[in-house]
Length: 563
Image (cartoon, rainbow, N blue to C red):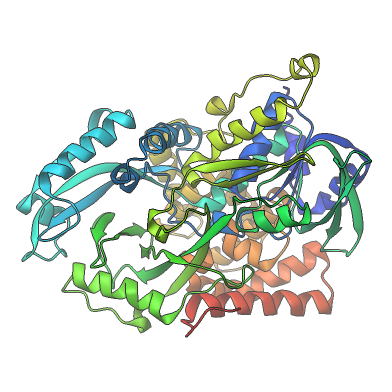
């Protein structure tokens, strides 16, 4: 399959949106995908790289649901070992190493500290055996293999731990990521392989032929209000928490259905929670929680509670935040945090498969396919880590619907070897070298704080060169203003950034990890959006209101969820 990088970049510009809609309306695709989270993105890349004609539509922005609200780890799932989900641990373990190679700037190895405490979930012997089995299943080698620590070694690694209860610890490998950035890069790569991809295009209903098979999708472009129909030979729903809503539109619900659980994370400025490294620790109810340093903050999560409220506005409650604060204050007794110390939060949903009489944390994270008589293939469940394998399983199901002759036209999956970002960085060492290079470039432009080089490198990889080069086109005296204007330009021209919330939440992660910067630069960014996208007064007001609401939800702890 020939990759047209330049055409792919044009295809993924919001300025090219009308051409993409022309293609959606006029072509017949091999596969139409509903849902632009990481699962849909993975399916689009797998299919397009095999040679299928693919389109993907997303009713909101890409990664605006579950795929922007995870713990932001490509991890093997140590706790799934405790639940004896051996296959899931094995697949997750091998997948994280693969995804690290595909985007080493974005999937970053971290040593996770698991403190062993008096009366804790894990004893020393079981932890040692469990981590050893974890390493074997995940095929971990070299310095990434688990290491057991005594009490002094554990407290040296993390002095803020409670010395009176710590018995020792385990050190093991995990990988930190940005789930929304990962989704965007996968989609951009799928566009390079010819996929037609648009956000803010909602599938409203199905139309059927005389044999009750899906004939086309009836959709609406939220930007213009225009209606369109999309025709394909096969249809896949990767709609995450909305999977059952799509299945109901297809009248294909059965005894299998989603069980939604909510996960909340809180973000604390580093100076208020100055841990040295990621920690995976016990909480009194027997669950485990992550505390992960990231740039200028430390984030902590997650909760795991049943959810049946508003899918479009999932928020953190006061009890969610207090649960996490209590866990932090108990684990790190010299730290006394209150609600006022939280800088921001995010709340997301896990679309799991329902199992009778199981608590939220006991539900399997395995994915499952539902295939309806109409031809709709739905995928639900699963984890961020498993997006590639989930995509392969979906495409294999799609290929089964084809004749042997037609199937032979398409290649085997090759996503294991397709770098997600071009130009690619190929190792952790190359990432570190490149970050130093960015630091030097920024220093010459008047930006000396190392954080900004780290942020650009881990957000964009070598694409940061394009952003830094663009800074020269702006005349703002403040170099950081020139930088964020260059980021805005890049997002609109190369990442289908359609709104303020796309930019500040999914493309840059600022709502969660640098919320003070939004207040500082919002007006500058808004002016550039108006210039590039020709927004009228109504659109400006709508955009400002949407941004204000998201900031409110990220900084407010409600007494109850929205119905």
